[in-house]
Length: 42
Image (spheres, rainbow, N blue to C red):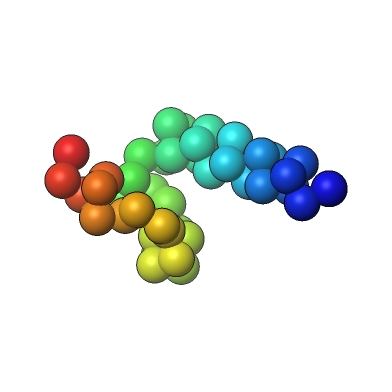
């Protein structure tokens, strides 16, 4: 069950990022985002 929840979270976050863009995501999501430093370099 944990894998299914993680997969759902990954897909949902990816779709939200595509729709809203980086600046449109909630600040608390960005504060807890793993690998954020890799995104900021791009």
